[in-house]
Length: 83
Image (cartoon, rainbow, N blue to C red; front, top):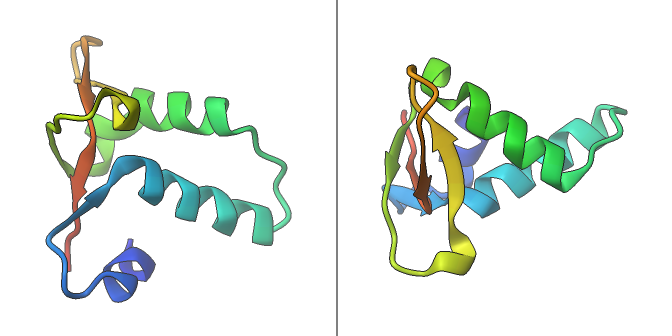
């Protein structure tokens, strides 16, 4: 998502929860009604199809469960921004 890359040019990784919040705000601006829990859950379900690179973190309150292509979920807290 180029919008996130432009906002965070000087960072290689950003927090997943922040990325999801930015995504949710964009959906709201486009006129879609969203619920944070469902956006986070849905993002976790399709994450492996999006081609992003997750990274583990240390703070449990920042974890988002992401599923791999086999349906196994693991907690991650960072996402690598592409160009």
